[in-house]
Length: 280
Image (cartoon, rainbow, N blue to C red; front, side, top):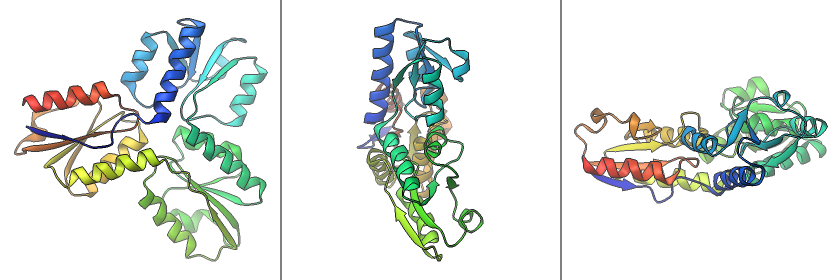
């Protein structure tokens, strides 16, 4: 099997920083003495390795004792969560991605400037849930058909987007908004360039192969988007977490396979998958 790897794939700097923050916190405070408020990143294999090294995980601040060391995941949290952590006298280790922090700051500033804030994104994604906490009554839109239903006319709109969204998808929604008679629009680009580069590399590779494998967590939004874009490019595409998900029928009749990976997928998963695929 001929295997081609996307030029840009795997870990981004935000994920690397979050993992380093988790490892450093465990090294400083000791195994079992640091609790992550949800999965640090959307990759189960990496999360399991961090837990094996001594990082604990909790879904709620209320479960933690005063003085505990709490790690804020790469997706960030609302100001309310940070305030409750302060009131409970928790030691906060903040691993929020710098670009997510930028989106949080932008949302707060747009609200202070008098704009009705609109966020293009998945309302169930932890990043989106955290970012919208920085302004009241943020409108979340993720489909063109949502615009007419969710956005009243005669508003001053300040628009941001989930960092992992594809530029084409964001542009499509903004184009629909622009067609309508809003008093003023202020659009701030909060998209992650590293994610965009991975998307561009994946689409480019998809045109050169018979089948695409996109590696990454099933709950990883940017990995899901990579898979969607590869399918849209017209190539058979499989979103897998590891080699364990592979089935021989996926490459039946294929001679050239492309491999890419989401921004939270480590090199060891990518390399193992590519090596085993080449052996077939």
